[in-house]
Image (cartoon, rainbow, N blue to C red; front, side, top):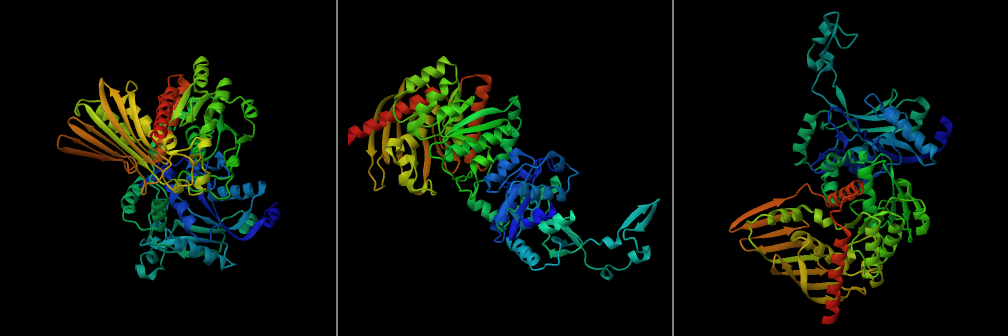
Length: 617
């Protein structure tokens, strides 16, 4: 067996391995605890990402949730570590041996070298890690390499106790020798979690990690997190840090409020007595976002099947980065079907409708006929064909149908709703909102001309795909009793973009609200750079302005200004929160917070705007 594994080693290849078990006692949840808005594990992943010699990054964890988090930062989690080697007494050798054996058993490439990066040492210089790899590769006699930093302590002068008497900690030393001056003793080094480099062949042959020839790498004296006090110290240090992993994270990823997510929803999966089968219809960028978040919420309490017509092989991260060489279906154990009826024959209880807009209604109807609760991405459709039929089936079968308008969960909009619930602002006088972003750069991984947003046959256009959110959240702010009486709009396909749908729309809506008429203006385009999204409300005795991209809100009451900035907010938080509400509605069989009628009303308004644009041309 040993020789077979050795024969499969790819010579010269280097993998990073990052251990992240979930049962930390000193600092609970340590490996995913947020450090300036980023999970601790992300710093080690970033270190590996920035180290040129490293070919692949593997996170070994026993936690489905931790694995999901690691994947969001583009690490691989090809397996879950067994519980018996994930407890307090588990050794590094055990998880290393497990990783090597798993790669061999599953026919995957086995590296010659492993770079062991512990999450507890987040502030590394990537040049040190690269230097460690090259140093170890260049020394064929060494069994391993380990980092250690110089220490001011002098262990040669330390004591141990035996039978009530002090003895030198060094067994062949006398007490008088231990009392010699410090400079008589050699410099000592304290091992740390900065970097280890290991050799697969040595591990397999000897059932050891380090052996007797451990190459020395002197590391800087950095913070290693073992205690709560260490984490608190690092929280202050990180603000002034210029380490490459920290710079990389800030440049590539938005800060997360993941800790709040895990604390708020961590036990939610326990409400399901057995795994639920979920049908994913469409697994493009938004479908994959829902997939990741479902897994985050439900862990092993979910089984995925999918109906995929295009069968795209691209796998995304939360930041819309393409994860190279990652098989989505394998990672999430998805069983895919090319025919909808075959997928429905597996009897899913929930269907996520995330395919192209023009296919929403037809697929939702088929799923509803079999008794599936529905989560439907916005917009509901691109016309009213079949909408009433879907509504009738949902009502007759007492199904849950939830619309994917995640912006209702934006903290700025929730704050507006709360502010306007009192009387301090007086009557609302007018509302002005805008949404603008360049279509060619929205999905940098594909030709914008081929996206669903660019094609009328797919239900594209700025009104149905961008402004639809503004229409919904205005209804959310004003309440369902507010109604649109008149619509005036101009726009259409005005730019040089190579599309056949509307790319600009300027709209004035006259709302009837509490017996008064309120003018609401909305501007939307596929051209604005830098992107913008804001909501401004003018009232009798004050005003409110929310910047939805920078997560900031200002409001005035008379001449006094107030403001809030939601620095810990991540865009993905909205998607997680709406999924929680959806699943909660399926459990309690209660009316969804964003029901099918919300989708119908916003669609009617969007179609009326498009019609008014055509009339004005």
